[in-house]
Length: 529
RNA sequence: GGGCCGCUAGCUCAGCUGGUAGAGCAACAGACUCUUAAUCUGUGGGUCAAAGGUUCGAUCCCUUUGCGGCUCACCA
Image (cartoon, rainbow, N blue to C red; front, side):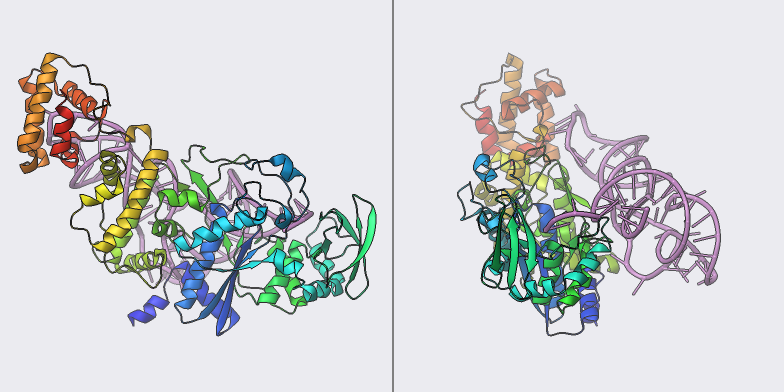
């Protein structure tokens, strides 16, 4: 009974899985696809497509289905412009109009430009529990794997032209061919196809050199299908059952519409699709920017959000709506929301049944390893508190963990990741007011009057003698006493204490702060006065 | 011009297959003889863009209108 309910979850990934099964029939194996041109940094917006597929894949698998999850790198695409953030732009400029797989990687990390972008993604995806099978289109085209597809396209030249013309303002010319050719002389796509012999011979002109040549596309690597034909050809080739798209593709007259018709010429059927919206960024402070706008990739996001929470951001939002990934103070709330979701999952926070079902599914899908859902909640420390602890210990994660005595092994494991994120956030994105550091011997002493010095000494003595057995509230009485006994106004005294402890005029609520810092540290710092 | 998506409390949004609405922040009120996105408790606040329609009943479905945004029509 409860099992049935789980399957009929209202989560969009589950609904999509049901729809795929309904529309594609009850198959033994489903193929889910995603892909992109690695012509620049693969940013977090592109990641949305990957994780959207991953979630649907998981939903299908949880229904007992076998799923092939493929990710196509369109690395036989053309290098159109030199990105601003790359070294040696003048070298790269020489490769414009050539396939990106033939462009050198001027950073020196990979064997070519496309590969450099690919490797970066392939290395990080396992961190968030995503394991697609990668397909490399340059390699496939160049090894003549798509000869049949290219021939089919040529054979259906007129039908394809008619389909594309339905949505074009300018109809394609009578001379148009549904293929594009990279020049065998220069590797550039600045060519014009002139004819096809009905078999494997294509005659083209290199527009730059003015040379004309006939090539055998079953034996040479130069021929490629343009996007609106390439996409459906690959749907047919792989038997794709599901592939989402951005709203540029999934709109009337967009490439999904034409591909849906073209794919039938290849003997295939269009996959079930769904549209995802773009991702905005918030609070990056313009730190990472290339080619004009702010760009963040998965690495940037994983710096401040744990893998579960990165997934959570996408799991909890319907793909068809835009949302922002925040690097500012919203981060605190996101962590809080996730912890709430976790508490609901473990029944620690009572909510209505419907809400519970929803959060439960979100929590499951947010976990990195779908076979290893935690059996106990995390050691929930508010993110804000972690930030304070880290600043006391100057970012030393292990020392902070050492202060949390009763955490289990699995909790420590998760906490460690969270602490690293918290520290990254403090040092890179947190507002200035949020940051502080305990003073130590090298720091200059605060100028104090005699009575202020005496107050600090009283404060130190109270800390030494009473801090450990006092409650926060009780201890604050001692703070007031230290001020009053020396004729100081509270605000003035607080200011002095903060200056002495952290070199700033303000800080976290004092009594609690001192308790968190611990007697020894505070006494040590104040012993300079 | 076509298509799509929004329009819900001052702000940011939830509201998943129709039963007259919710969360955070802000506001207000009390408590804390220190404060920063900031301590706790409590309170107020919405003709769910507008008008029609279907229904016993609509924020949710249909139609029209308005406002905002995105996208296609060139390439991918």
